[in-house]
Figure (cartoon, rainbow, N blue to C red):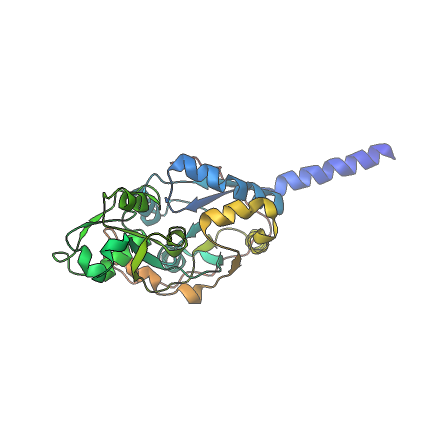
Length: 289
């Protein structure tokens, strides 16, 4: 009897081991790679506990590398990114939006109080710091200053979302283009421009990820705010909670990338519907790029 019980336990363990798989998660390079790994490590561990699978963060060193990987279709299982990237993956690579941050995305152009009088046009002779192209902040600056011969110097030297703010305080730049959730942390700076609003950053899955895994990840992300140990993660990424997302609400935003080098000129074909799978297929663990 004891032997049978031990045999049953052994089969259960083997079954769980066999069904577990490795999945990669990519995020926009808004932090240096090592810092991103530390920020998202608790989230990767949480998803692992909630789903029984292993999640590995896959980082790019900069936006040039991030965009290159997207264009090349570098394999990745999940992505957490702004609507223009998320929609590109949906329309051209068959990704499925699962959840998004509850708050819409807006960018604010921050300046010192003494530079607010004439609005964003007063910055024409100065420098504005942004994350590099094709980050959303950089593309929004292109909408604000569409004439390349009549715009401030737009410096894409920032390595984190807060580098531009630091440059404004140090008087090394007149303005910084940052997400609203970053701008709200600096009440002593003024906003001279708010971008239009887009749906919040989406957490999407490759269509190759089995439906059962996508559903488990969705459920875990929707409950993330209930875990007190992960409040710091939510704070760092600037949201109170995640809500369900759909392809329809982000549709069309990939066209923001049309002036970025490498953008495919052909109209995307409708993405094939994700194929449900009975069991998770193991994927190789990612390495930091």
